[in-house]
Length: 260
Image 1 (cartoon, rainbow, N blue to C red):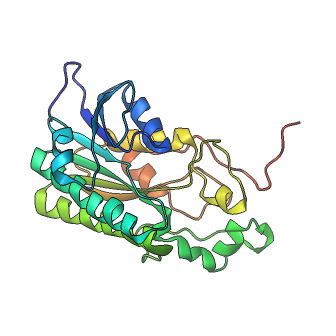
Image 2 (image 1 turned 45 degrees about the horizontal axis):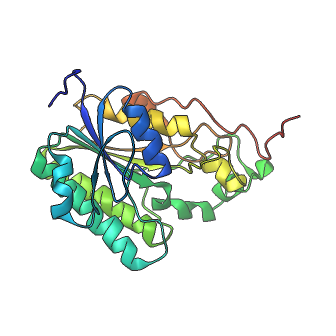
């Protein structure tokens, strides 16, 4: 892999002005050269300002890069935004990475790809914190279970995962997809459902850092990034086995105890 003057990887982070992209990018910058690809300027790092929907405009950001962490996404309700931000944008990132000889792309996916399992008991009880209705051995959903997307956004993230599988198989690129739980600025859950899918800020940073430094033998994989919550129904064992992800945080109960 191309090395910078300090011997570390050169990492491109898309969407670094967002909450997760900013957390991840600033943490990675402590150990690696980090460049941002963003529509707005990002202070403190080399930044290429461009829209990921414009392939020609984003190509320069990928020059000399080893690893891409693709965090940019459209989260709004408009279908046109899903197309430009999450369909065309994902394709452009993978294609620009391929053209530039990038070795690994880390794709920020979402639990929305399987969110409608939450309609079924006993997972429904888990996201509603009805603990008496949760069996002693609760069910765990893995990325290998069939997709059940919650809306067009979840379906668009499945497209990005499938695209990553293609680029890994056809072009020899290492691709790791992370289905990220709910990460918020306040770093604590708002309600019972959030407590089940909560991912702390330091756990999402750990997950991405583990993916960046993962062995080259990881050619394609899917991981859930969630904290170790009482209501957790998303698998974390696979990420532990493959890349050593061990959550540092978790919501042990809901409602949470209030500070005294």
